[in-house]
Image 1: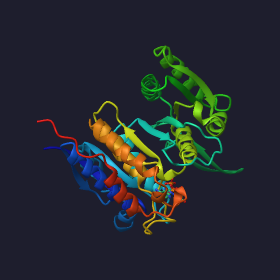
Image 2 (image 1 turned 30 degrees about the vertical axis):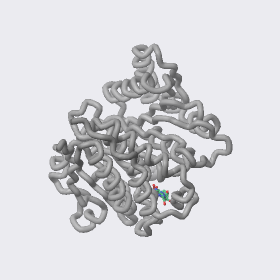
Image 3 (image 1 turned 180 degrees about the vertical axis):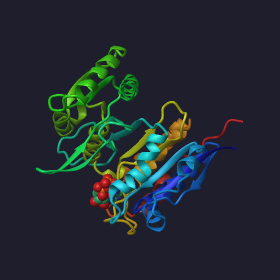
Length: 356
Ligand code: ATP
C-alpha cells in the first residue's frame, strides 16, 4: 500500500488534544482511499525545551528532511517566551525548508455564524510571505545617552517577493480572479514601495487577474465592512499574519482556521498547522475545537496528491458544523473535542469501491 511518511509534532497545550483527532480522521479517510499515513511522532515542544534547553534536538531539521509532510499542532506555553518557542522550532522549519508560502484559506462554514451582522458569503485565501519580511532577526537594542533604543530591520528580497506574489496571482487565476495586495507604502518608505513594484511586475504576467493594492489599515477594515468582496489577499509576513486572525474571527472562530506552510517546488517537506496557538486557557479540558487541525489535514492530503480524500474530509467538516449540537464552546456550543472527533469520523462519506 502507498504510504506517506508524516512527521507529527503535537507540540503544546491543545495541540496535543486536536492533533490526535485529526490523525484519527485522516487515517480513516486514507484507508477508504487506498493509501496509508505512516506517522513519526516527535515530542518537540516547550515541555521538551524545559527538559532539554532547546525546542528540538540539534539534528531536528535533518530528521524532518525526509518526511513527505510535517503535521504540527501548536507551540507555546506560559513561561517560555514566544521568541524562544517560535525561533527555536517554527521559524527554523519554515526557513530551512523554504516554505515560502503560508496559505490560509478562510470561509464561513455551513451553519456557523459570523460575529458580523450581515456577513454574506465569505471565502478568502490569504497568502502570506513566510520566510523573510518583518519577522527578521536583524537589529538589536542599544543604550544611548538619550535612553535605550531598539532597532528591527525588515528584509524584502526580489526573489522572496516575486515567488510569493506569483503563487498568489496563480491562485487567483484558479479561484475568483480577484486579488488584493496588502501594502503600506504611504508610511513605510523602502520595503513597501519595493513590494508594490514587484507586485505590478508579477501582475503584468497575469492579465486575467483583477487586482489592486490596499493599505493594510484600510484592508483590515474591508474585512469587516465588505468581507464578501474578498477573494485572494496577499501580504508580507506581518500583514498576512494579522489579516488571517481577522479573517478567522469573521469566519466564527480561530478554532476553524487552518494554514499550510508550503514549499511549492516540492524540494522540501511542507508543514500544516492551525492558525491558532496552544490556547493554554482551555488546554487539558477536552473542549478545544479540532476542526482547524482537521482542515489542515485536508490541506495536507491535497498537497500529497489525494484531492478526493481531502474533499471527503471537508465534506465531513461541513456536515459537523451544520449541526448545532456539535459546536464547541468557541462556537457558542457545549460539544467536547471528543464529540466532534467522533462525529467527524462518522460523517466521512461511505467508502467508494477502489479501482482494481
Ligand atoms: P499565539 O500567540 O500562538 O497565536 P495566543 O495565546 O495568542 O497564541 P491562541 O492560543 O490561538 O492565541 O488562543 C486565542 C484564543 O482563542 C484563546 O482564548 C483560546 O482559548 C481560543 N482558541 C484558540 N484555538 C482554539 C480552539 N481550537 N478551540 C477553541 N478555542 C480556541
